[in-house]
Length: 146
Image (cartoon, rainbow, N blue to C red; front, side):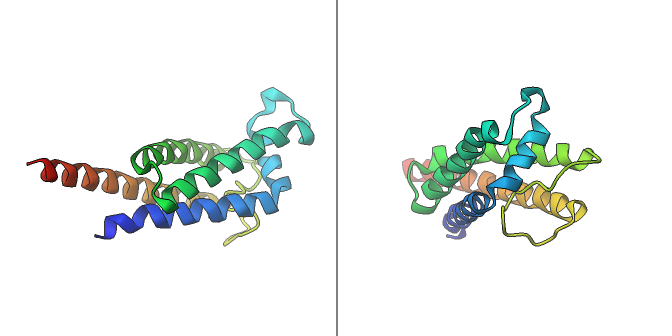
């Protein structure tokens, strides 16, 4: 049952991304400041929001990895990925945007022009995987009842 491995893979990625963001929190804060100019935050004022996002991502990753409240973890992860994808689209459309810092210190591409579309594609694949897992989970539960 391959659909059982999907949450583990996504969970491991979320944990890795949270850890990498924590290692290079400065660049993540720069991205937060770019995305929230209306808050007019200093770097120290943006730190609580950066920390909350990192902790949220780590908590979701852990829940997916160990299978804790899996259905809710998948739903919350899908919502989070939707927001992350909207942020990536915003960064892609902005001409002077910093790197998304999606995976913190771990970078496959340094150029924003390569990393942002790759992040969008990755998120869409993860969203598709979550949809598949939820539909398989619902189908198997319905079959078990009949």
